[in-house]
Image 1 (spheres, rainbow, N blue to C red):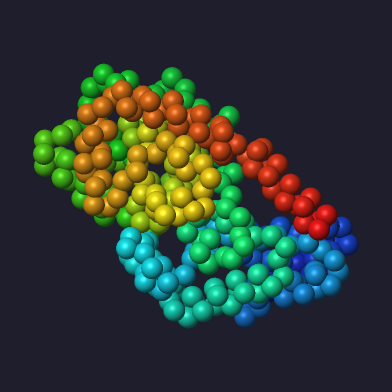
Image 2 (cartoon, helix red, strand yellow):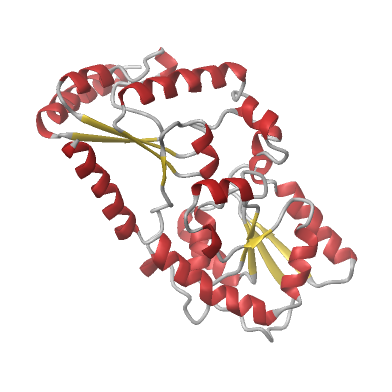
Length: 307
């Protein structure tokens, strides 16, 4: 691979530029600059950065910290128990643990974007998603489906991985409702360009997000910003322990076993859907505004630099 030496050279050149220029290094997905798992290179830059007096912040997103075997043992409902990703093995868990230990040794601050990750990241701070700009995801005229619209009740589900998101339970719930004679249509969308997501959400009556992880994803934030009711599995014990705004989350809390009855109740209550629509957008403005989260992140930079 002739491109590999070029990439290594460019990375080395950027690293030298970065250590001369920046005081704070904020890495995402538990990664760093001199870090390549396939080459057994794990955060080689951390010791050097600390010797140079730099501050290090790491953000973990999900399976970069989530331990499969521990999750399966600890939780009654877990994506790890049903995940079909072949490389996620006990050996990968051991590697995750090794990397997390190094992060905890060198990082000045750690953020986690999913509450369940807090169990594996001692001293971390939970941070809401900042990936959705509410001004770009609005409930326009075509976004709010009229309560008296004719046709089936449209349920949107957009898995990136069916086993992790609990897609089979969504399919089972919709099949059960159709067997009861209820007019429901499951819109199951996979591998579409992100530019098409807004139009797909606009056509839906409700959105079903993930049913196993215990937290909502970026799709939920997009749907709430557009005024769509969302159903998702939220793990109660993690919410109470790690999420300060848990009582304000305007999501219909469901499980893989109760999804059909929760969908039925929502289908039969246009008034509740309207209430959720209004509350959802306000929640995104209050909690997921990227500028507010950026301000919180910058405050962490100032704190660690002042320490």
